[in-house]
Amino acid sequence: MSLTKGHWVTIGVTIGAVILTAVFHICIREWYQPDIRYEEGSWYRSTGYAIGSLKLQNFGHSDAEDVQIIASFSEPITDIATNDPSVTFKVINGGVGKKEVCGLISRIVPDEKIYVYFATENPSLLNLPSSFISNIKFKGGKGKAGKPLFSAILGGIIGLVIGMLAAFLTAKRFEKIAFESHYTNLEKSIMLGLTSGSQGLSEEQLKKKLETEFGKVSFRKFTLFRAAISAYKAIRGIKDTKLSSN
Image (cartoon, rainbow, N blue to C red; front, side):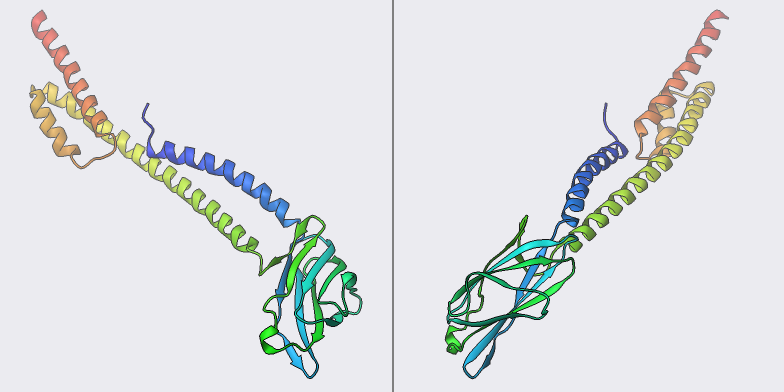
């Protein structure tokens, strides 16, 4: 059995729905996970010291716990501070007097922004590091640079769902219109076969009439011709039987 465009669209939508369901569950899971993003700010230089900043933000929808930050610099660290006095940067390893530090922030709640400032001895311009963060991790995940793509991905998925739904409904609409038109043409073709047989026209003359009537029809044209010819042969058979019995 050959499949029509409508059947293929239905199959495609069904497969798409299965895939989208799986993607939807993954998105829901990701939505409720913490998502720590970080940005390294520009250096501020003054007499005797330089200050680099680190911005942390939780774009997720649950708390990020035990956020561990590892940073290294070209010169020894002289001080570490945060923008919020209630937020503690607990040094685990290294720190003041060292060129590297491993520190811990106990919790970052959803949408919270924390700035950590690292002061070091003033290096030469050429020794200013373009990036000083080695690693950021937290319970259940890792920090990432830049802003999350989740919103863009979610928007794309929603757009895909809407597009597939629109395509499905459009295909169904066109299929309905095509079948309604087909049944009207089918009725015409049968009547044309019956009248041609009653008038004593030849089968070739009937085919010419069918070509004139349905030449521009693309949907199931062969069915229209076959129905007309079957009706033509049926009426001719009845007439021939009556003639032979007379």
